[in-house]
Amino acid sequence: MSFGRDDIGWTPIMEEAQRATRVLHPDDLDLPRPKNRRIITVANQKGGVGKTTSTVNLAAGLALHGLKVLVIDLDPQGNASTALGVEHRGGVPSVYEVLLGEISVADAAAKSTQSDNLYCVPATIDLAGSEIELVTMVAREGRLKEALNSEAVEALDFDYVFVDCPPSLGLLTVNALVAAHEVLIPIQCEYYALEGLGQLLRNIELVQSHLNPALWVSTILLTMYDGRTKLADQVTAEVRDHFGDLTLRTVIPRSVKISEAPGFGQTVLTYDPGSRGSMSYLDAAREIAERGAERKTA
Image (tube, rainbow, N blue to C red):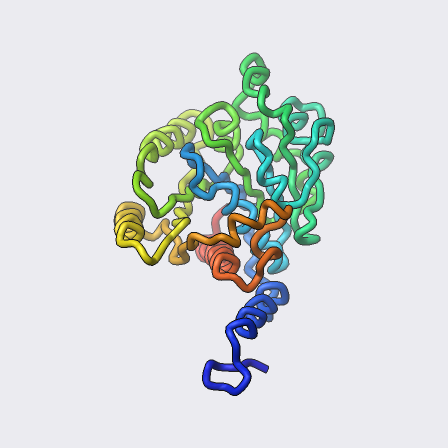
C-alpha cells in the first residue's frame, strides 16, 4: 500500500522508507541486457569529480536490477574496492597481478558485499608502482584488454564491466581506454568543471587513432549538482549545450549520504537506499541500460 501526502499517517520518514523498499526490491527487476558485454571506462583526470563514486553506484544500480557487473579498480588508492566491501590489503590477488600477466581477471575478481551480481577486481598499494614496471613490457598499453579477452572472463558472462581510472592520464588510464568500448565522463557542476576536459578528449582521440578505433565517448554524467546555486544551472546548461544527447537526463545531487557511504564499505544504494543520491544513481543506471539497448552498442 502506498500513501500520498494527503493521506492520514503520511510522514517524510514513511516516504523515504517506501523509496528504500523500491530501490532494494524493485518491482521491475530486469533492465535490458546488452547484446554484447559493455566495457565502460570512467575517466576524468580532475580529482574530486565523483569518478569512483559514480563507478560503484552505477555498477550497484545495474546489479540490483539483475545484471551481472564487474568493477575493475585501476586507481592505486583502492577507493572503489573499499566502497564495494572487497578486501584490498597487500598480498590480495589484485589488478596489479592481472596487468603483469601473473593471474587472470577471474582469479582476482571478488564478490562484493553489496550484491550477488556484483564483482570487483581490487586495487592494492602494489599498483602505485605499476606504471614504471609496465613501461618496459611488450604491448604495455593493451595489458588490460588482453586480460579481459580471456576465456576465463567469457565464462563469467558479465553484462557490464566498469573500469575506474586514477585521476591522471598515465599508462593505467591508457590501458583502461584501450580495453573499453565506451567512455563515461563525470563532470561536476562547479566552477572550472570543463577545465582540462579538452586534454582528456584529445587523449581519447589519440587512443582511437592508434590503439582502439572502436572507442567512443558514450556518456556524460553531471555530478555534485546543488540546485540552490545559479552556477550549477549554468554549468549544466553549458555541458548539455556542448555534449548534447551524450549527457544523461539524470543529474547526481551533492549529498552527504553519498560521501558517507564509502566510509562504511558500502555504496549509497545500500547505505541509504531511500536518499535522493541513491534514487539518482539508480535512475542514471537505468538510463545507461536503456540507452544501450536503444543503440544496440557492443
